[in-house]
Image 1 (cartoon, rainbow, N blue to C red):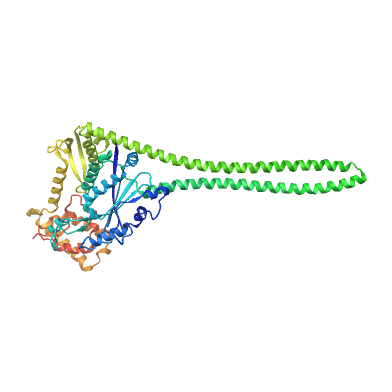
Image 2 (cartoon, rainbow, N blue to C red):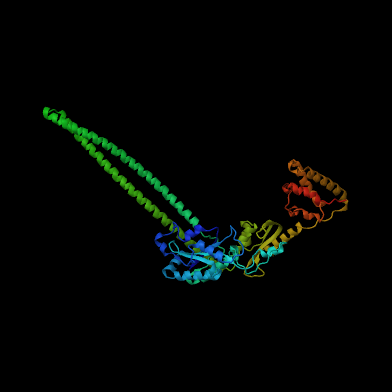
Amino acid sequence: MGFVVLHMEKAHGSDSGTTAHIERFIIPKNADPTRTHLNRKLIEYPDGIKDRSAAVQRRLEEAGLTRKIGSNQVRAIRINVSGTHEDMKRIEEEGRLDEWCADNLKYFADTFGKENIVAAHLHRDEETPHIHVTLVPIVKGERKRRKREEQTKKRYRKKPTDTVRLCADDIMTRLKLKSYQDTYAEAMAKYGLQRGIDGSKARHKSTQQYYRDIQKLADNLKAEVVDLQQQKEMAREELRRAKKEIQTEKLKGAATTAAANIAESVGSLFGSNKVKTLERENTALHREVADHEETIEALQDRIQTMQADHSREIREMQQRHGREIADKDTRHKQEISFLKTVIARAAAWFPYFREMLRIENLCRLVGFDERQTATLVKGKPLEYAGELYSEEHGRKFTTEKAGFQVLKDPTDGTRLVLAIDRKPIAEWFKEQFEKLRQNIHRPMQPQRKGRGVKLFTISLYLDSFIDFLARTNSIDSFPVICSIAISIISRWFFPLLISADSASALPDEYFSPNFHNADIFSFSSNKIRALPNTITLWK
């Protein structure tokens, strides 16, 4: 039993590049041109609409949107649906591909609205049959920000809750994406396809990455071809050099033949022994020329053999690379399918298997190392003191020596929770954050009367010093020693001089336990000049 493939991603801008790919205005390298005619357009465009991009624009114009579409706003969502390669080939061979396409269109029309599905294309010229669906994210209902806006002082004009909006974020929330995977798998179950593993780390390989891999392989083949061409040029140079030598020997042979003929004529007149000698030398030269010609023919045969071998090696190399890529892809898919099956069986046999995986990720996210995580996952208690990270609040909280353990959720027996001192860690994080928030905004306590004189003197000097800095309007050019003095005085004496009413004028970071003296240096001159207004003299 194979797995379904449902991949959704936001399209930015006009998305013309994807349109060219889907409409096959440009034939990609991974497509078989001999099968492109098998591709089909599952949704016909309205009159006057020529391509996918125009269909998206038509839907936006007819949707009745009241807000202006932003330049960076998502206008369409790309959806790619398919299945495991072997299962899609089986569906194609069984003649159920049309039925599979119809069920896909029905699912997306029921899920997102038929009017929002503006394009759907079936591709059969690539390795695995698949469908490209284009969704225009037109939604209804109240905006997510409305509740937050109502809590602020600003008041916005109320709008009807059923007003149509263009919002891809409402469609692609984490919970909705998970729901799509579940419902789509249920719709495709009749074809022997099932949902992938929930929470799997496997990711869809983009078309751009696939093309980059193909280009890298092509570059390697080009480098090998260039090397073979260089070897071919060297062989041709050797052949030219041999031909030149043979041509020289032929000229020598012609001259020798002419001399022999003259000598023969002279010898017939004088009958000398020198003529016979010339004849022998001439015969030897002819024999040498014949040997050189044989050598040339052998070199030519060798070059032709080398060329044929090079061509055959290139073809074999290309075929070998193709087989290796196909084998690796097949093995990868088999391994993924096997692992998914094993994990699915483990999850079925062990009810808390998925929960233990989730707890493991939570432990690592909080800040536990491998050894501590292993201890907690095994169900053993752990004592820990240090910092713990909260993803919800985006900060770390410090804990003294506390006991940690993985326990059953008291509200849901099928779930596990990470507990600190037998309290769920999520509740502990909320308590710590609430304490921090209350500490930031707590009023300052009055000081003992016995310190009134010293506080009055310190505050008077501080008030005068800051007022001098403000009147000189040159605090930015003071030496570092002035900044250090300001930081020390502000750090140790401001809490003694600030009343409950004036404390609200200082930034919340000042009262944070993580505040350091060095943070004073980040105050601008304008903030420092405003500090005398917050000082209450203890008289």
